[in-house]
Length: 101
Image (cartoon, rainbow, N blue to C red; front, side, top):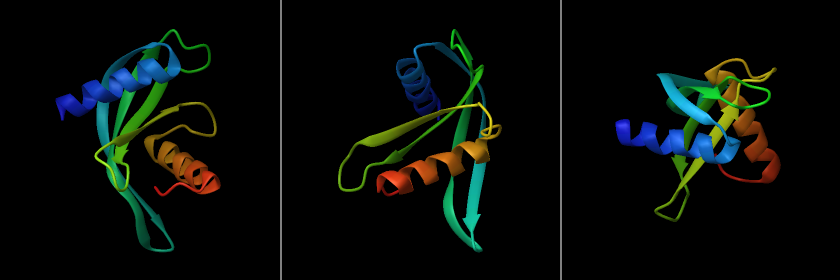
């Protein structure tokens, strides 16, 4: 888990150009019409030096058909105010872009 947290911290810092520190890791289960559409752990980071946010939610998921991972780093800015909100926002963005979640 520490290796995952370090990779996620590096992704947050790279993607948002700020320093990040792990605060906690929380499990999120997202359901749609009763079916689980996402189940995983979100790492919550405090961030320093970003102009509009002080918290970032981060996780990764495997890229289908490869050994790579896709990193997500969603800022806590309304309407995203919780780890579950960050997952929902990423699902919607992926759907709009035609990417599998």
